[in-house]
View 1 (spheres, helix red, strand yellow):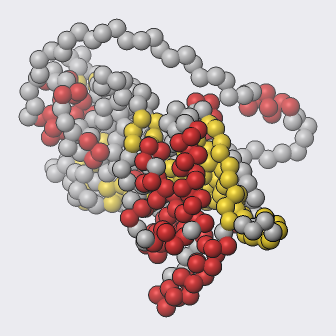
View 2 (view 1 turned 120 degrees about the vertical axis):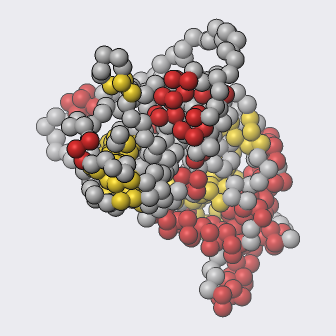
Amino acid sequence: MPTEILMPALSPTMEEGTLAKWLVKEGDTVSAGDLLAEIETDKATMEFEAVDEGTIGKLLVAEGTEGVKVNTPIAVLLEEGESADDIASEASAPSPEPGPQAAGATEAAPAAKSEDGPAKPAPAAPKDDSGARIFASPLARRIAAEKGLDLRQIKGSGPHGRIVRADVEDAKPAAAPAKEAAKPADKAPAPASGPSSDAVMAMYEGREFEEVKLDGMRRTIAARLTEAKQTVPHFYLRREIRLDALMKFRAELNRQLAPRGVKLSVNDFIIKACALALQAVPDANAVWAGDRVLKLKPSDVAVAVAIEGGLFTPVLKDAEMKSLSALSAEMKDLAKRARDRKLAPHEYQGGTFAISNLGMFGIENFDAVINPPHGAILAVGAGLKKPVVGADGELTVATVMSVTLSVDHRVIDGALGAELLQQIVDNLENPMVMLA
């Protein structure tokens, strides 16, 4: 029977998206791996691939449609010997509790028939013992239900560990699990985030204004930063860094690298300094994981990149191992693709530490909000000429940059945060040590 192609979840947090463009039309024959559509998430525009072969029988969602929920049918795929006449006149409703779908995983889930004829939806997405949703296609959930399988006992072979049809077809029912212990009471509802939109609009009745619609990125930023300020116990450490040695060293390096077309920025040195500091203070190279702390071995450093309507934080993985020129090239590439919204989720998720540099905008100092689950974020201000007291006690002029380290107190205590910031300062004030 015809197979529904469902709106995929192209990132773990995606709940809905915009079907930006169809790359196929009705009647086209497709194979696994063929591109079907371009889909806009809250962060990027990504291509969506087919996982089965067949003929596109019907496109259910028009190009440009916004707010398409994950696992909503967006097209119908016909198998060999089927025709458009086999497609029901009305699209089947999505499952009551659809499970997230990994990128490129569009496994069909035709509705089963009950004895009295009406179609039954696929079983609701299951959850593991911790309450986290188990990624499984609707068809895999239905087959598992029919065979009496516990999806918690099945390892998925699909993208990101998603359970697909092949994983459950040959599986055998496991012994019934022991009765679960009583679960704690539900968490208290989140505190109100402010007055309602109607209440705010009433305040400005009679005043001229423009109402700006929130897109997915702005909604996500609002939700995550509200969560961060409400749940993460921030504290702040501030230092001033003298940049004269770095500026001189950078100018000399850029002169020598010019034939290779490489030009290092101060930000490249900051990334390297932070990556090496995390290695020197390994207890600070950590993230908050709900009921535990995860200490990472590599230095995966995220860098905030402003784009129209929001920002990305692409992650430079293993930054401590890379040369300054390699970090510079990678950062330029990530920033360009961030502005074009062409980053894949794995390129802007993860990391333990972030950098937000507003110095190029003339900002002298500011406090940045931690991006959970990161343990800290460094806010970088502009380098300015200032009067300072030299080592011999005489008044002199130096280029000074103000930085603020925002720290999650659950992960990093005050003394440990101070040690991390001292390492960053030492690296930047003595830049040659970063090449040792």
